[in-house]
Image 1 (cartoon, one colour):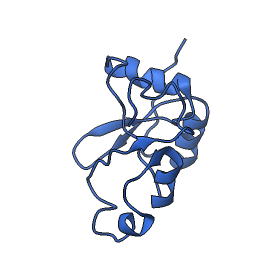
Image 2 (tube, rainbow, N blue to C red):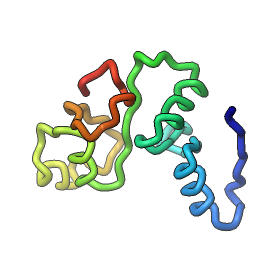
Image 3 (cartoon, helix red, strand yellow):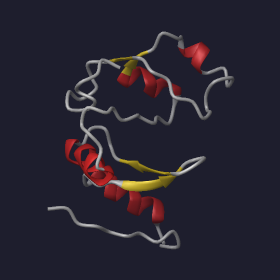
Length: 116
């Protein structure tokens, strides 16, 4: 059974609280350039499933992965661009979605109907 926790943006130790929620299979809302998005750790099957439930989204529709560093892309995907091409600053960071073939390190439950 899921529980809902509302965390105030004025809460002391907000970042630590969000990290704790994520590490405990939780889902958080994060502002993007246009809307609020939902975030969870890709290694948490429970949290990934919860995102689908919250959104009422079909499990056949893929989710995106956001990464903190260019190197992280190579953990989850097989880019068709080199690290140097990705790290020039012309493309990333930026409001773009890149689609690459998945690495075997990406959990099988994540976007299981897709190879990207």
